[in-house]
Figure 1 (tube, rainbow, N blue to C red):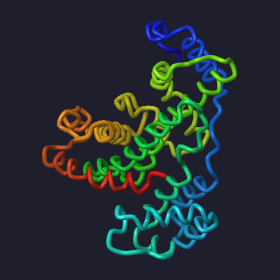
Figure 2 (figure 1 turned 90 degrees about the vertical axis):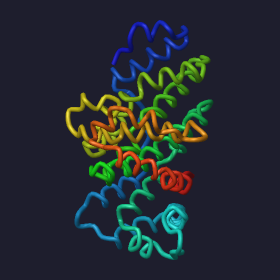
Figure 3 (figure 1 turned 120 degrees about the vertical axis):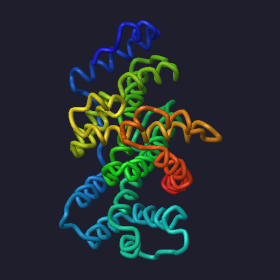
Amino acid sequence: MAITTGAFAELSSQGQKAASYLENLLNEKKIEVPMLPEVASRVLALSNDPDSDAAQLAKLIQGDQALAAHVMRIANSAAYTPNASMVSLQQAIARLGMGVISEISLVASLNSKMFNAPNFEDRISEIWAHALCTALWGKEVARTSKRNVEASFLCGLLHSIGRPVVLQSISDYAHDMQLQISNEEALVLEQLYHIAFGVVVVEKWGMPIIVQESVRSYQHYADAQGSVEQAMVINAAAKLSSVMLTSLESDYSEVLSDTVFADLNLYEDDIETLKLKEEAVISGLEAMRV
């Protein structure tokens, strides 16, 4: 994936060196992909196995005390259980369902702490907050447009996974070569390369094809080879997330006029329904953030 001559020329000499390094990582297939936590891999396997049951999921989560405590804290938050307190994983799974508990477990095991990128910690936290928000908005958009709700959470959660990997690669390179890459240029490189890096990550993690396609095509869903509707859902969810996270008083009027909502066949009543979901998304985000 060669970046455009114009984009390359706008970088400083050190930024250009970093861009060439990222290009070489892609071409030589040497991107250092973080390990997918074993518990996340097993949760995904269970959630995709039609023969799995609540007892298996509870046993898996209970095998990691820190994870179990984290899952129970989120499950008992106002976002999920406003009027009751659950005391066991079995009770939480029975009340919230395996799908929701699997989502909570994935968020608890996949987080910004997976990445080690000195000088970019704050940006990675922002990226992760946006990813969580997109996962939550993705479910709302999918539900309103009658698309795949369960797949939308995972697709939203991982749609920007390439961004922290790009930043970690830049951080490692700058340290090894004793370069100073400004935050502004790092953001430019992040934007240029996060799709290509993200595709490599989800492929190496063995994520479902629908997730891989969302990562590859969510920005330009018309170009998707398959799963076009899923890419549309994530495109819309990412835009809603950006509005919610970047303005004190969220004004969705402009973003909701975006063509993606028309492409999802969402009409005025549907749009009004989506606007009312902000509080639920905020509540879910606050519960899930580590």
